[in-house]
Length: 227
Image (cartoon, rainbow, N blue to C red):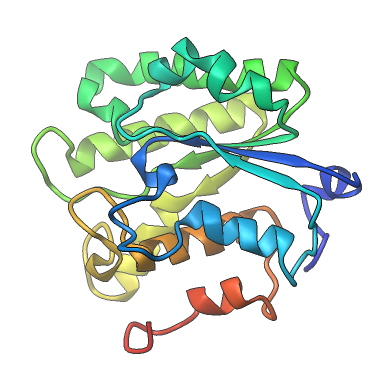
């Protein structure tokens, strides 16, 4: 599947700048326990043997604890100065603490992020956050509501969508578990190194960049016993 899919026009360029935006999940520290985060795994796939896009630049400006409003407030520093060609956006895990009443505002801010990036000429990829387990103000019900808002924004704005929430729900169901495979979670809402491997595969699959010869792709296919 190398070079085939929704990113054909981007991949035709000699050099591309990729930008990851989000919160602690995308920042990818602590909960990966020293292993690579999903953003780092996608970077290896892009610049390594799978796609060999060595001149490409990949930037991760995600910040622990951030919400969509924080990103908009700091947009010039976290987005504009990098002049990205592709922007992968993953928010919601912190935004959902605003409760049901905050869902519409979240969608509005997410839409503003999409439009600002597009005005600068970037292709935008939205991602639903991976599921949460019951934990204080972050509830599975709120997660489902906010994931629905991400899907709605993606549909309305005609962006690419990586639906981690749906993929994890399907993986959990296949294991006889609810909401998320517990083996993929570091705590109630942070993926661990296994969860990040699953996320990397889902990003590559959604973008049409899957390659079974890639070490990153094979990592994602390991069974729980062999991880």
